[in-house]
Image (cartoon, rainbow, N blue to C red; front, top):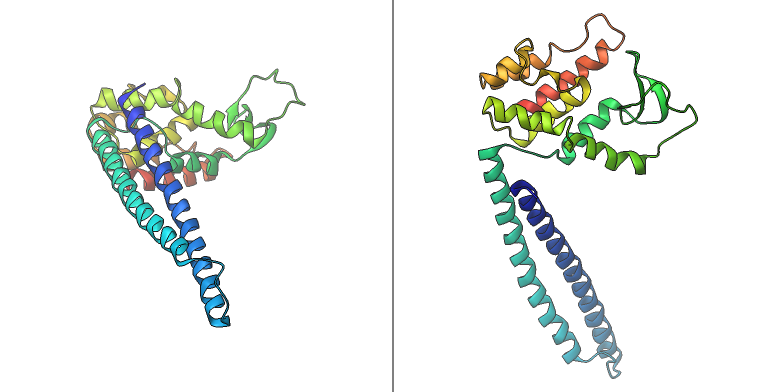
Length: 243
């Protein structure tokens, strides 16, 4: 497991603990409010309360303990996130984010059955290319396609290409830059990496942030049926790269 993956897992664990503690705290506070209301109602009615002050006090103590625990997890989340941010600033992002996945989904669209993508390629799910002999009746669900998309984006063809690009160019990509180039690579393939015939590679190699962003707009298949869609995608990738 890479250093980046370990740092991501540390962030995820801290967030889960924080969220679980926050949920427990909310439930305990709600219970204390209900007990206090029952006690007050009994007192107002002049009857012996069925909820003792000691029980309410115990919940008050528990609220205090959980408050302290939540504060501790919040600090741990911030420290874990700071470590991950610092590492990626120095070494570049290495995995797609939820925002990156959403960008790819927005422009690929989902299809449970195979279709022609407009350029002669048989495609299914979130833009997954399949062989021509792919059975016509076979389908895929979103539940199957969602993890497969992330796996492909982080895998040996697309994610590995963007990671290789930032290593070769000695240009550590922040998360938004990584996601933008990953969307671009998922759409057009990894052939641009290391190829000086591609303007986008030359700009990345020159560490020209604005140049890379502007170069994205060049790749839209002018005159083809998909030009308008590709232009919108390239513009979205450019905005993300510069944000």
